[in-house]
Structures are given as C-alpha cells and as structure tokens.
Image (cartoon, rainbow, N blue to C red; front, side):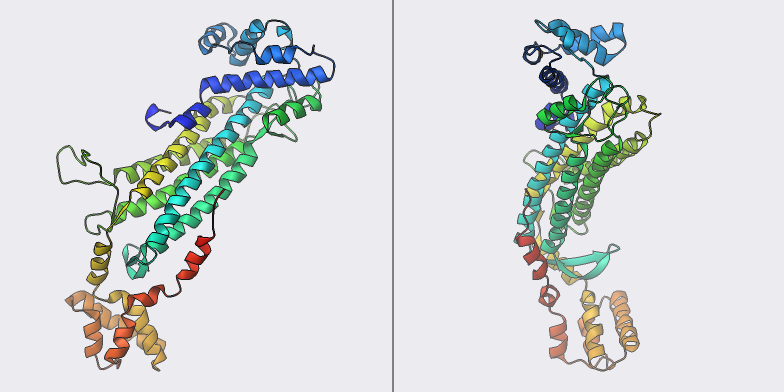
Length: 432
C-alpha cells in the first residue's frame, strides 16, 4: 500500500522486519519443542532466537539463486546461528513457517482494527447523545419523509459499529491459527506436540486439519469482514456527503485554516474526507473478492494464492485501518448546523406531518382510504402552490379539524417522544 494511507501502527505490523522476526521466532519455538523431545540440543532454540536478524537485502540476493524466498531465509538464518544452525527448519515445510507467522500478524492486525473501531464508536456515541434532540428532516429516497433527530441517525451508526466490532473479533479468532504439520499435513516428519508448542508460544490456535496450508476460507472471511467495515463507513460517509450538499447544508466536515476546497473556486468547501472513505471502501470490496478466489487450491496446495495474498492481506488491513481513523476524525470534527436543519424542516411547508394528519382523520371516524385520499389531495396542492400544508388543511371543509387539533398535529416533539428507547439502549453499550 502506498505510504499516503499507511498509518504507523498498522505499517509496523505489516513491515518486512516484523514478518522476518516472526519467522525467526517460529523457528526458535520449533527448536524448543524438538529439544523437549530430546531431538535437538537444548541450546539451539536460544541460539536461533538471539541470532542476528536476517537482512531483507541479503534474502533478495540469496533468492536470486534459490528462486525460493523461504529457502533463502532459512539458509541465511541457519548460517547466522552461532552453533546448531543445522537444526533450523528441522522437520518443517515452508508453509509451517509462513502460515503460522501470518496468523500472528493477522491477529495483531485485527486487534488494531478492533481498537480503531472502538475509538470511532466512542466518537459517534458522544455525538449521538449531544444531538439526540437536534430535530431535522428525515428523508427516504432523497425525499422529505418525517422529522427525526440527528442524534437518532448517529445512534444507528453506533449500533452498526458495535456489530462491526463483533465481526472483527470473530475474524480475529478465525485467522489467529497456525500449523506445523509438514508437507501435506500428515505430521510425518514433525509430531503434533511441536505444532502445539509453537502455536501456544505465539498465542495461536492450531489448525485442526491442515493440508500444506491453513484453510484460505479463514482469510476470505477476514477480508469479507474488512469489506463490511468499508461498507459501513461508506454509508456514514455518503450521509455526510449528502447533508453537506449546498442545497441542504445541515452538516459539514471541519475545514482547517489554510485549507483550499478548489484550486480555481475559492468558495468551495468540499466533503473530500468522506469522498476519500467512499473510494477506500471500493478497494476493500475488491480485496474481498480476491480472498474468495484464493480458497480453491489444487489438491493439498498450490501457490496461486501466494502472490495475491502478499498484496491483499496487508493492503486491506492498512486501508481499513486508515479509513476507520479518517472517519473518526470526520465525526470528531463534524460541524452540525442546527439552524439549517430547522430551516429545512420549515421549508417542507408542513408536508412532513402528513401521516399525523392521516391518523387524526382516521381517529375522527373517517375511513382510512378516504383519509388518505383527502390528505394526498391537499398535500399535492401544497406542493404545487407552495401554500403551507397547515393552512390548506384548516381551510378545507372535508378535513374538519380544529385549530387546536392542527397545532397539536404539527408539533415536532411528538415524533421523538418514543425515541428515548433507542438512547436507553445505546447508553449502556460499551466496546472492549
């Protein structure tokens, strides 16, 4: 992934130095397990663990000869171990090291995304409670519907992030596995006790039945969860982008001193951060597709998945991490224009109260079909003439509602009288 979208924490997790260090620890733990069985001298594990880190440049130079990156790593590590280097990689196959180390890195990556999600959830929850009584027009199909509150809109985001948090925990459990079972997963040259020791030492579960690799459905699941992270963030970003449109102007991304919205038009204040998140969500969906393609391998394994994974696993993790951090910044700095919300509500001419009028007419004894037809007719007149809906209702003899009744109907607080139930559910919700 390009540097522009790589934040330090996730960049470190997916760095080459982290990967090679994890490879080295897998080899040390395997030697420890063999030593317990009396096969490998007791000092070898520590000699492997304290050997100089393998130089990535040296690996590439060696790989030019071996045409095999793991063989190059093993050769160099074995050569750097002071005494006992011949025991490096004893009984193991390449995927024993690669997939087990990858399980460690994916688990750390999931932990980072879980932490990012919690921070975004906390920001959204704070804003939801701050604006639980900030009344605005609710819209369906992009058309005025009924009054709602900005806080209620944000509450739905918070609960979606709680589901995201759950999915990320499940994804972590799915990918935090290792395997040290040999060339085709039969334990022919390495007993299960070695695998158990290595995986326990790394905080991983054991793949219960591996081929030469851990199941790639695990990685597909992880990538699909990241795609869902992107889908949720895109939903939030799309809402912000729509509400920032000049014609609506109800919320706005923060705009810093010296920031320019356009190189040509000085007045521009564009929702560029939300647009950025929308684009990143598209990448995450694409990465998930690659994960699905990687599940079906030939027989016990091939390496058709390998080249793709080198790109999509780090890049998807980095993109999701960046998108979560970016959305957190957007929410924390969001400018909410409650006056514009009130003005837009007023601009509906009262049409957003049509359902309350309908229900009142039914309660007064009119048939539902007759009430619907009457309200629809008057609402259409209000649309066409620009006359306030309240006034037309008061003047229409077919309605028969008193001014007191109409004033009660046109009370925005009535729409939020039961919404407190949502905030009661949200109040006690915390993520860990």
